[in-house]
Length: 153
Image (tube, rainbow, N blue to C red):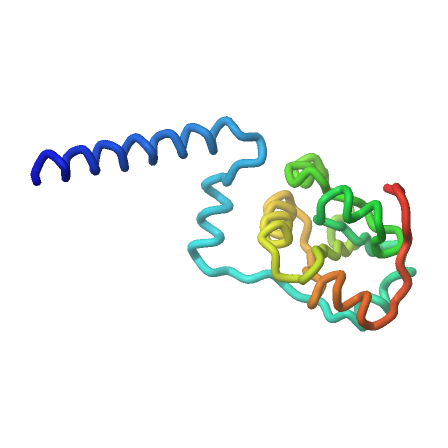
């Protein structure tokens, strides 16, 4: 019985080590900062569908689509920028007038981990006006708001 317990503990430790190494080598892996945000239970700042629609024509507002590239190509919020692959958000650099820029992130349902990860990555990069679209792209479609089709970035 003791040998079985020892083998199980050894397998568990080996699996944990393999998982940590795989995550560390993956460019889109979970960083310690992302994990800390998740463990604190911090939530994203939301923006309603109606308010986001009102801001659609505002030049200081940028919609960021965190869905997969294929979904973005089918349809997206007009003027939106695709943040696929997920690590692309790390490439964004805040402009000098960060407070003047409003970033609205969305996925399909509004509750996905990609939105939370992009939200906190952008906040740590110095962007202050970062919002998650409440209800996501599904709520945008439900309201009958305009969409753009095709491979536009």
